[in-house]
Amino acid sequence: MTTRPVLRIFISSTAVDLREYRDKVRDAVLRLEDLPIAMETFSAQSGVPASECIRMVAQADALICIVAHRYGFVPPPEQGGDGERSITWLEVDAAKRAGKPVFVFLLDPKAPWNETKEQDRLTSEPPEKTSEIVKAVQKLKEFRAYLEREYTRSTFSSADQLAQLVTTTLANFVPQTDHAASNDKARSASAYYFAVQSKIIQNYTRTFVGRVQAHQALDSFLQEHKRGYFVVRAAPGQGKTALSCHLVSERGYVHHLIHRTGGRSDSRLILRSLAGQLLPLAGREETLPEATSELAKTFEELLPVAAAQRGRVVILIDALDELPAEITEEPPYLVGETVPDGVYFVVTSRPGERLDRLMERMFAIPHELYELGPLDLSEMRDILESRRPQISSAEVERIAESSQGNPLYLPAVADQLESNPAYDLQTLPAGIEGFFRTAIASLGLGNAILGGVLGLLSVARAPLSRFPTQQDHG
Image (cartoon, rainbow, N blue to C red; front, top):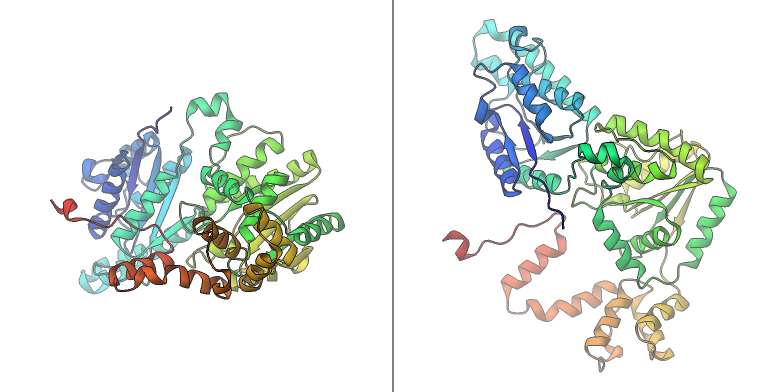
C-alpha cells in the first residue's frame, strides 16, 4: 500500500492585509500533513533577495497564490527583481518556469473588506507617493488579468472559505514524480484522472437499462456528421448522469463528470484528465503542462491525432450545469469552431443560461439538441424487474403512474419494497418530490434540529465541515 508523500506547498501573497487568510491556509496545509513554505518563516519583505524566494519556489511541489486588493512588495533589480513585478508575481512565474502547479485564489470583489485597498493609499499617504500608488493599482489589474488568462482560479469571500477551497484542491492534487515522468509518462498522465469517477460509473451502470431512443439518436448523429456536438438536455433526476456513465462503460468514451466538489469543476484539472485519457489514444507519451492555456493547446492538438489513430473520438462531458456560477468564462475543454473531423462532443445539462450560451456557440458546428424525457412503460418495467423479478404487471403500472417516468423514483420504490414487502403501493404519492417528502416526513416531526439538518443537507452545494461537539472544545 502506497502512502501520499509529504508535499512542500509554497504560499504566495501579500502579507499584512492577508495575515488571517495566510494563517488559515497554512493550518489547512498542515492538517493535510504537508509542509507549508511561507514568508512568515523567511520574511520576503525584510531583505531576503527575490532570488531566494524563487529558489524555494523551484524546490516546492506546488504554489498557492492568493490575491486580494494589494499589489505588494516590488523587488528592485539589486534584490533580484525587475522593478515592475511584485514578489508574488515573480514567484508565480518562477513556479511556471519550474513546471510546478499554481493554484490561484482570488478574493471576490463583492466580498466585505476591512483592510486597506491599494487605491485607498491615495488619501492616506503623502502626495509624493501618488505616482507609485497609481502604478501599483494598474499593475494589480494586470496581474489579476494574467492569472485569469493563464490559470484556473477559485474565488473566496472569507478566510474559512479559502481554507476549505485550499483543502479540497490539495486533497485532489497528485504530484508527478521524476520517476513517473522518466519511466512511465503515459501512466503518470493517467494519474490525473478523477478516481471517484470510476466508482460513480460502476454504481450507475450496475442497474442501468433502457434509453434505447437516446442511443439511436446519438448513433444517427455520429453517422450523419463528420464532427460536432450532441447535447442532451433534461430536467433534474431524469437520468443524464446514468446515461453518461452507461455510454462511458459501454463505449469507452473519453469523459469527465462535472461536480461542484472534489475539484471536478476546475478547468485545469479537467483538461489534465481529458488530455491524460487522450494520450494513449493518440499513441503519445509526454508530460502534461501545468498552465491552463498550455493544457488547452495540448488538448486541442491531441484531438485530431487521436481521431486519426482511432477513426473517431468522442469526448463526453456530463452535468455542464454543475459548474459554479462564479466560473463565467467558457470552458476551455469545449472546443468551438475548430472541432476537427472525427471528433465529437456529448454534453449533458439541465436547461439554463450556461447551456443556452453553449448552444449559441454551436451555430457554425454540426449539433443536435436531444431532450431526455421521462422513461416509457417498457423501460420502467425492465428497471423494476431487474430489482424485483416477481413484481406483477399491475404493480408495475401503479408505480409507473405515480413515478411519472422519473428514473430516481423507481429505485427508491424498490428500496422501500425490499425493506417493507407489505408496503401498500396504493399510497404512493405522485412525483419524486412527493415520494421523498413522504419518506422523510416523520423524521422531522417534533425535532427542529433534525429537520434543520435535513434541510441543510438537501440544499448544500459544497462539502460541510464536521459539526463540533463538546469534546472538541475540551
